[in-house]
Image (cartoon, rainbow, N blue to C red; front, side, top):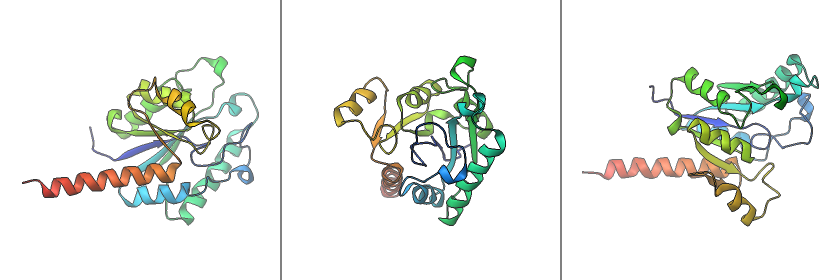
Amino acid sequence: MLTTKLIILGRDGVLNEYREGHVTEPEEWHPVPGALEAVARLNHAGWHTVVATNQSGIGRGMIDMSAVNAVHAHMHRMLQQRGGRLDAVFFCPHTPEDDCSCRKPRPGLLMDIGRRYGVDLKNVPMVCDIDRDLQAAVAAGCVPHLVRSGRAAALSDAQVQDLLAPVPGAMAHASLGAFAEYLLSRDAAAAHAARAAP
């Protein structure tokens, strides 16, 4: 296995503001404040970032591949303007009725990412904004992190704790920016401890 520093991100509610229905055109994709800058900070610290997203609007005929590609091209451009980048976007186009293995909360999409990058998912953080993604993270062996910038934003502290209780090792953060601060501070402390060791 390679030692690539990899982070898996949800899209809607993590990178961009969650909206009911589907993002069907670039103008509907609005970044969560600070999220793109957080990706840039992580990139500059040596982390590769990929997106794993359910896009059942494709399977339902609400959006076609050209529209999905246009939305993601817009997302990539906005990230580049802030000095960040995503290595790739992995998505499941199926509806729940398709009973596929790649639609979260099933782990197929994440397992595909692990194989593609040759990494052990037990060392890969996954940043989510909804319980089904946390479940997918656990099923795939990722380290689950919840951000309260999307669908979890309306939850009380007690509800968030209830959400995390059945998810081993899960942590909550206010946003992707807060997650990035946590991760980079953790890495800095580990590096300092390694330098200080006899």
